[in-house]
Image 1 (cartoon, one colour):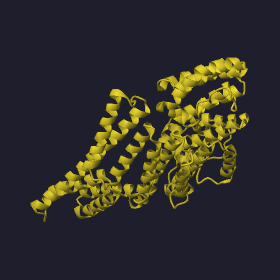
Image 2 (tube, rainbow, N blue to C red; image 1 turned 90 degrees about the vertical axis):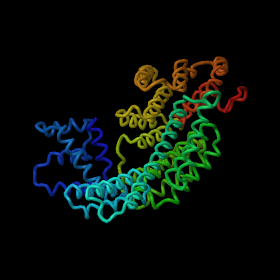
Image 3 (cartoon, rainbow, N blue to C red; image 1 turned 45 degrees about the vertical axis):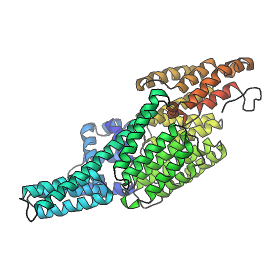
Image 4 (cartoon, rainbow, N blue to C red; image 1 turned 30 degrees about the vertical axis):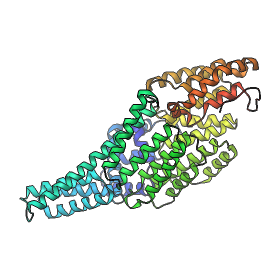
Length: 505
């Protein structure tokens, strides 16, 4: 696992970061095994399928891969942290706080206090309450240690009250996050429905969230953000999609008007855009995705580190493809693929990143829907090769399911039987199967392609209500948001232009 994670880290490096690493190595006189491992990991001439561990042991049999990789990881992360200290306010705050503590330990209180005040000021600007409290607590401890010089009792009490108010704000934020996470978990896992006693549990969460929102400072960015996230998640799962869309736009405006407290780069904002786009595709609001895709693409063109720009570019590409497929505009999707192949990527986003898997998925899905099964198989196999290191990812599961559909359409029935067994065995480790998975496997098992129309019509009457029920089940969205397998199943029983069968959308 270490080798896989190390390779992900190295592949996420920009050209500038690689240069800084080599400069660091050049300053050291000793023989550096970790540099040999680094060069081996970025060797683009390597065409075999051997792992990094295997290639290192073949080339340097007397060296320890574990020790070398651990040290390389340490050096790389130390350098990357130092780079971020110079770019990101949050990293600066932690760095100043560490320097302040070091100065206090070495009896340099004046210098330490300057670093402490710097950390406090930056944390205030960034509304970083954990850091604000840490700085305040350290200042009070320092004053006690040096005998409270030039400070009155009232000034001391004022400092203590500021720290107390910070703790209260921090506690309210924790409670707010806890309620949002609890609502997300209950609704995502399907443990709550909107009826009877379960509805009372939902109402209790809503009332608690409103209480926190009104009790806390409604002007705080984090409070407003959490309130909107809570609202949007609730609206989506109650079917009030237009209200959810309104909240998404308000959330986007909130981020845009608070640029001064963005991290550098703004991963939090990028994550929010990703979440909004994911929610919109889940509820089928494909046209409304365009605005947020443009916002994401704009981030990829700003002066941010390469890894951030590369990730923003990839997210924009993924949802652009997703939007075209969702609107059943396959020609547009194919055109986008040609454009994306001609674009130079900002960086090679680390293999195994879920967004890279999503891109390969929608690439394969485009070809699958256009009945170009050989190309679809090629790209889905890439996804499965990269993603097998993280089978718990939802995207890997969706990829395996699409792979099963491709095998079926290719009439590879012999391998298909093995693939279905393997699928069930692997994902049984991660809980109950999805209803849509069972329906897909039942469809494959009955093989309607080789059945007569009378049989299909009779079976369809039993299947249709089950599919309608699956579409209404919010828990099934974890798979259906990528591809509506219900429509694929329907296509096996009826033709698109069938007039004699009432098709429920």
